[in-house]
Amino acid sequence: MKDLIDKNLIHPSQTKPSYQIKIVFFTFLATITPVTLIFLLLNIGQKTGLGYLTRDTAALTNTPFYIGLFSNIGILLWCSCATICLFSYAILKQNNRSRELAGFLLFSGLLTSFLTLDDLLMLHEEVFPLYLKFPEKLFYVLYLMTILFGFGKNFKAIKKTEFIILSASVGFFILSILSDKIHNHHIVAVMEDVFKIIGISTWLTYLTRLCFREINSLLRLSKINKDF
Image (tube, rainbow, N blue to C red; front, side):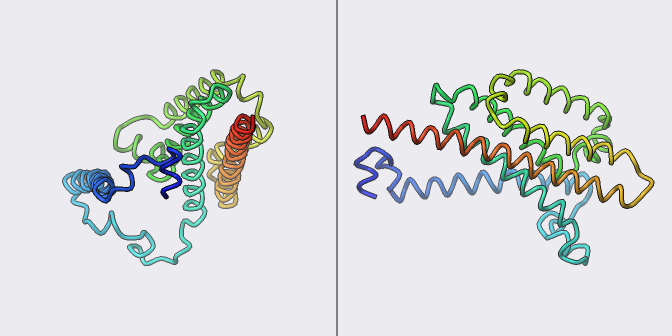
């Protein structure tokens, strides 16, 4: 630890107990405040019990543990991807060589974060159309406009990446959406979810490989500069 402080990698104040206790306190507030607000809003609006917000879905509904397994895995993949993108952006944004791709990673991280919330809370399927009276079709239009804007703005950066993997991911998402419009067969509904989770995993693969490549390149460049 002392070596890290001497090399200015860790600020001396970060090792003090009082500083760490302060971090724990603010983490507690940042966690408990939104949780409390959500509970109060739902409890006031729909008389929802606390257990409905805190307990596991399978335990509440008395169903097997694997209920919604594919959906849960998809959310984990979304969340992992968003975290990797935003963390990589924080590392790369100060480097002139990586600034262009850092902007694309920021867009991808924010978009993936919203997709995570959409999948987790069923925003476009239930929350917006039923509770906020926001048409689902308009939701898809806004999705499309956001994606086209982001891809258009970052087109130069995307050309420098493994864009075929990105194209494959988009293709699987399109197949999932098209399958969602066919409601006359159980197999089609299953294929919708299969295409979706393949699309998510491909999206994660593309962005993770990009983040790894850029950070690895930055580290190598830093090592070369240090050697000279």
